[in-house]
Amino acid sequence: MAYRLLLLLATLALLFVAAAGQEGNNISKPFNPSCSTSDNYTDGSQYKKNLDQFLAALPTAAGDNGWFYKGSAGSGPDAVFGLIMCFADRDASDCLYCISTASAGITTACPGSRNVSAAYDACVLRYSAAPIPATADLGYVFAEPLTAIGMPVTSEAVPDAYVPLMASLSSGIAFDPSRSFRSSMAYSSTGSQEMKMYGLAQCTRDLNGSECSTCIRSYAIRLGKLFPSHTGCSIKGYSCYLRYQVSFPIDITLPPAPAPAPPTSSRPTPEPSKTGIVIGVSVGSVSIMIILAIFSIWLLRWRRRRQARILEEAREQELGEGGS
Image (cartoon, rainbow, N blue to C red; front, side, top):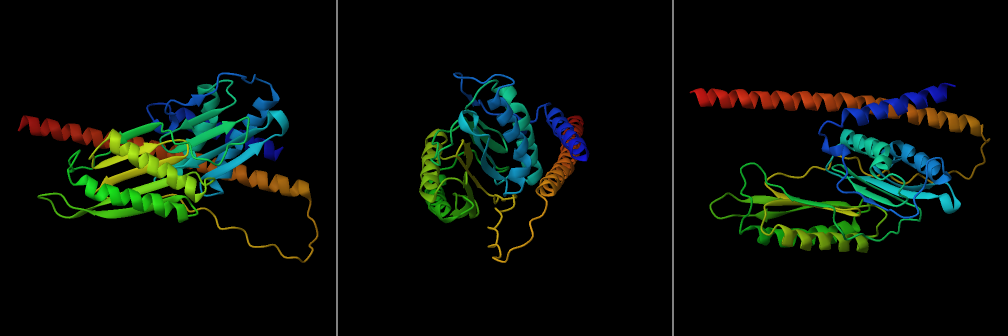
């Protein structure tokens, strides 16, 4: 009874988080999701039940694994396979919010679809009726220029730093088990002081080093064609993420993937009650979910109040300057 009550509270909390983010919050909106249109499931089907089970487990499963999770739910022809990953330059509250709202709203964005890929501002979600292969999807979903305050949009000095930076990112990430890698290169433009160009590359952790490196190289070439000589850009897809900018470092705010568990002792131990283990783990996970959801709501509201205050101060300053 206590477990069902906690599960209900967690569900309500996550739904409230999703509702709170509908007013213009890009974190909860997918960029043109890919939704299959053939062999759709129906409400009440076993596939839908397995999908609901998989999506409901994502916030806790990803949070316990460095904000990446790849798994499945169910078995046989109705099994659901999927993964979710948060982008490394987003903080834990953005990540939890993205995972919670994505898993709560994706079936509305792609009703009945068995195979779905969706990229958001802070995370990427995929699920399918077949195992997701550990090969890089080289297509991209979203790309945009990024220009730091006080920096020009483009500069002839960009290629001198961009080319070696992309080479460093694409090679270095192949050896990083977290599949998240940062690097920087000296950047010098005529008439300005020497600065640095900073870069971040990230892949889903199910990819091996070669697949990940190939994806980042592909994105580097694509960005160079889409936004030549831009002082900052980002590109996101279902397997990879690449970002660079001149002036300010790119912070990785998410915790690293947890270390592998130590080997278990060979000494036999009495087997505890399996029912107690399941209930204890479930109640603990749901309790953590509730706390994180409530914290996300508070943080989201605080950010909105802060943004509104900044905008109001900017308007007052403009009015003051206009009247002087």
